[in-house]
Image 1: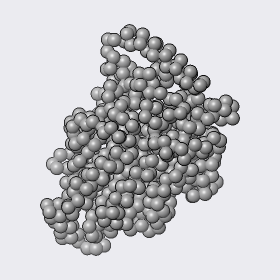
Image 2: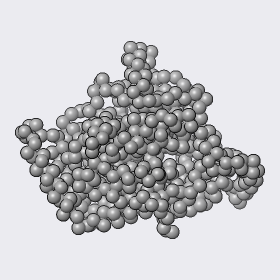
Image 3: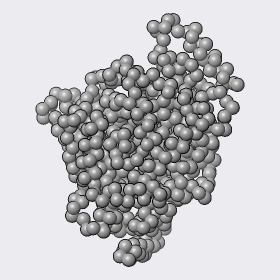
Image 4: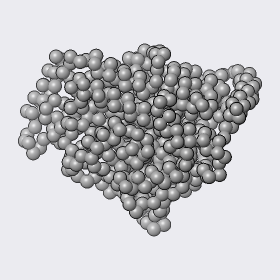
Amino acid sequence: MRTTIVWLFSCFVMAVSTPSLSAAPEQDTVTETQPPNIVLLLADDLGFSDLASYGSEISTPTLDILASQGVRFSNFHVAANCAPTRAMLMTGVNNHRAGVGNIIEMIPDKFRGSPSYQGTLSTNTVTVATLLRDAGYHTYMAGKWHLGQSPELLPSARGYERTVALADSGADNWEQKPYMPIYDQANWFADGERFDLPEDFYSSRFLIDKIIEFVDSNAESDAPFFAYVPFQAVHIPVQAPQAFIDRYEDTYKDGWEVLRARRYQAAKTLGLVPENSTVEPMASTQSWQNLEPETKRYQAKRMAVYAAMVEAMDFHIGRLIQHLKDTDRYDNTIFIFASDNGSEGAGINIESNLVNDLMLSLIDYNDDYETLGLKGSFNTIGPNFASAAASPLSFYKFYVGEGGLRVPLIIAGEPLNLSDPNSIIDAFSYATDIVPTILQMTGVPQPNGRYNGREVEPIVGRSVVPLLEGQTQRIYGDDDAIGYELNGHRALFLGDHKIVYNRPPIGDGVWHLYNIATDPGETQDLRDQQPQRFAHMQALYEQFVVEHGVLPVAEDFDPQQVMVSRMMRDRFGGYLIALVCVVVALVAFGFYRRRRLRTH
């Protein structure tokens, strides 16, 4: 009852304070009746072409229906790794200004004094959940948070009414188990308290079950809800139920080069990239034809598990949608689906090695063919199939090529006033745009630098509602620059153009200039042809560095070494010598065991 009164009063205030219909804010077009429910669905490490509606061979019928009823964005960008994107999606603030210049696991100790490199969401920001909750919404979250795990930083303290949250960068999908030796446990929290997962846990199923539970817990309430579901799919370890894996048994037998080419053609046919655009092989991709038959078989299975994990996520999203239909909530719900970054290229390329064996031994995993993707199995797709998942773009996660930054975005729902359903919007948009979009859809005002009597970082994103309603062709003009940096990789967007610098060993350590509207594959460097534009954009990038507190990294900086050093110090302390002895024994045993299993 209280929330209903809040909404009635809110509508009254808006009515008496609006001087005329012509001066009414744009958000009124979607909030003339009951404010809509909002469901924000976030995949983890999903590549640009990993959905069928984006050119994939993977079955994703639920998301494809949303795409056909709503709109797809072909030029939507996020950060190149998870927590920075999540900070922007929650606040509408640039990730450096929000305190998350990088994931906390990769920030050097010497950076930790900088407000831009805390690795946790700054308390000087206000989340979209807080804004919606204070406007009368119920707010729910189930999934990966990765923006802080101290009490004041958990989602239960950042505007969410009900939560079940994974605080780490990732974890096992079958049990409560860390996926990397940098963690001593998988840190799950429910409503701010430590939480034990159920015995029958599978991540995508469990997260949707919790969101359904949260929504049903307020079944008698007339207030709308905001539900944030950040999946573990398809972050490593890549795992899926056997029934889904079986569907892709023979799908990837032709290898990653063929798959990258097929998805490129599909993306052109769908209109997601220009017909005359080109695609090039990635420097990190190895030749499929040169592999031994057994190696091909094993690599194809890795990608089959990945496809299965994507389909399983889609299947469980379908369960949520069906439940909303069954409970008469669907018709007033808007769905927003995106990925936090491009496909994940980490993991071994072809054969096992000592580092891989060490990691698996330390965290009690195996990578045996027969059980790949099941409980106890550790799986990745590696840089070869990651290049196909990002097709037809260049690079992947952790790099600032389009394959690391450009991801799917689908927006759909009955409350929207779409000018052209089942269409593709090719205007540039950015992760910071999601919060102002949600606020306009719900009629909730932006904080504009102050909230509840205190200063907060202002929202810098722009609502995409004018694009959805056909009021404009673009929301960023030719003079609107957006900079980005991660681990010394650098980029700046301006109009249709982008300057980009990717560090070795995958990058070449040279600045390039591309027109990403006509050349999303970043194949035609315009630096020498357009020196004035290039110089202007470099100057804008340097301005971005100063305004956002971006710190330089050494030429030989390796974020992986940061993680290893922190693990040695924080987890093992003074027992390093003993650890080395144990590691040698574990590596030897693990190496022998895996080779023996693969030859029998």
